[in-house]
Amino acid sequence: MKLTILIPCYNEIKTIDKILKKIEKTVNFEKEIIIIDDFSDDGSREYLNKLENSKEYKIILNDKNYGKGYCLRKGIKIASGDIIIVQDADLEYDPSDFPKLINPINDGIADVVYGSRFVGSEEKRVLFFWHSIGNRVLTILSNMFTNINLTDMECCYKAFKTNIIKDINLKENRFGFEPEITAKIAKKDLRIYEVGIKYFGRKYSEGKKITWKDGFRAIYCIVYYSLFD
Image 1 (cartoon, rainbow, N blue to C red):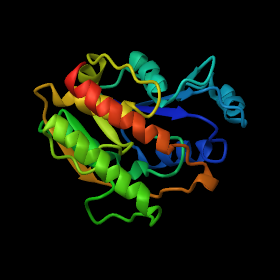
Image 2 (image 1 turned 30 degrees about the vertical axis):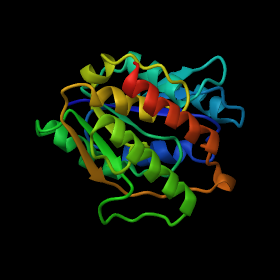
Image 3 (image 1 turned 90 degrees about the vertical axis):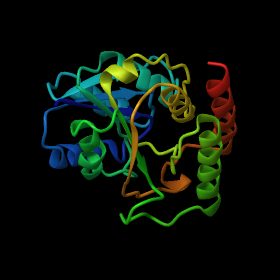
Image 4 (image 1 turned 180 degrees about the horizontal axis):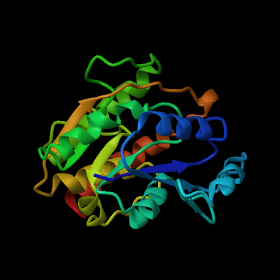
């Protein structure tokens, strides 16, 4: 089994080096790491330029700022692993959870595995009440349209059999990736699992980027990709 780790990056100079070191320390199986920089202007791009000739990483530098979904499409296109997992460039999610996410696929019982910040006994940072309510509302709305029973549709950590996600026509450029991919895998005859993960969320002062506007886009994506695409 070879794992492809996709890391979209936008202005994460404070954390990109730390997350790469954490992956190297905790992920002990065969892997490729694809980092897609979304036209950072805080030094992240210059840092990644230094890694471009490294055999350990594949670096994609976008020609302008497109968004997370666009970055993931670029990474999926060149991925060569058997399983693809999404890892943000910040420190909100812990790569030590990778085995929990990929084991159901390796064991032959799952095609897709979602992480969940709302189930399990792992440690989770206490943060914004209304964000957690918003996430739960979006998840419930998504479940109503897809008829699956996820607890955390918006969670970053998702693992896919590579052949499955490469066969899905993804369109969203920003954070709409989460509801879009959920709606599209729900239409297929796939085995979807969910596992509890650790979560070390951050505040906007620490670099968090998703906003209420993305919440409204998520509602549109849930309805549109469930019913019309």
